[in-house]
Length: 271
Image (cartoon, rainbow, N blue to C red; front, side):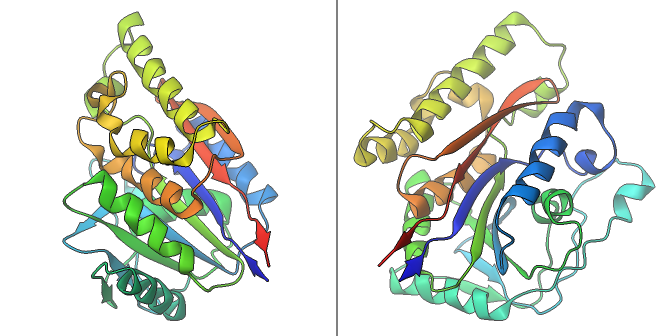
């Protein structure tokens, strides 16, 4: 009997702002805190972060990865944030082997630390920092099909009680975040969110069609307005490639004045 991992795509907000009491992140903080309380506490967490790109999928393999404060212009306390969770080399090795077995060249990195795509949401979900974590990079081609294939390869992971998190943002237009809201911007944001929600949640959509929609995400309404560069969307592709079905739970939050989504595929047990 095998149990699939919990799989969660989350919109992680702007830099460290969710941890600094920013009112534009209140709903995000509530939702992530709630996920941490309701999900079965995992034995380990694998995070695909929008903030790490390499030529091949690369996996943190250190035992005590440091934190990378990969943001700029925030108050001093943003650079004092601590999240001393351990690494998990055994899980890193499993991820590496799963990718290689699928014909996807991969690399282990024992030196790299955890960026804010990992430590910001996890500090909200699991503040005790007592769950071992591994981070997996994106591929810098930013090819949607490549990231769907990475997720599919992870279906063979043999690791009990695992949580896989795609840490990105379903809306990521930095200029729009800091532009006064207009009805046109809101309509563009909502049109893409509606398309993405339908794509990920409609149980009647054949999986081949769901995958094609995600592979050609840039044809969705206002796709390139919502994602001028797609690195914050691609963790979702990895999540779907792993889950290979409609998600059971979708939540929407207003983050920095824009609608953003979170998608959860719960664990299933099979013989």
